[in-house]
Length: 181
Image (tube, one colour):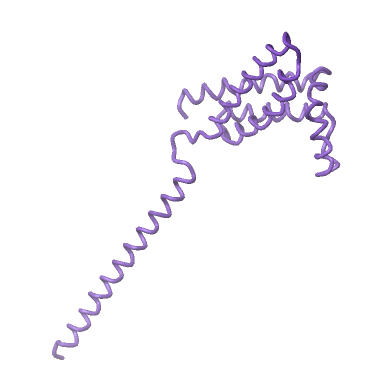
């Protein structure tokens, strides 16, 4: 991994690891209340999937914080970077919508929320880049199409070689029949 990628991933992940640890230690009532904007809608859906899944706001905030810590550490250390970045990006969207609704608050408060919303949007952009980054190696789509093309070419060459060898064998057999003896 190149030093720039390593440093960029560590810097990007640091926000999620530090905030995730802080939230795990103390979720805070204010954060739980803010999260209810999203968890009140998601909770019933989770209960339908499996009643054993926690659906209260405090538990969901802690689960999200734990996923931020784990995915952030994976991203920072270069392990499973693409899935880790995707997990962080997926968790950032509801957090941003619930935490910074600049469109629904008054003028003095909306500027701060809008700034934080845009910062989270910038983080989301970085995470999407990290999720799509193949580290300079060709992506799966290219590799599979290239392998298929290479296989097709090799099959054509094998058929051509087999025809040539069959022709040589036939000519050898015909020549052998003409020989006395």
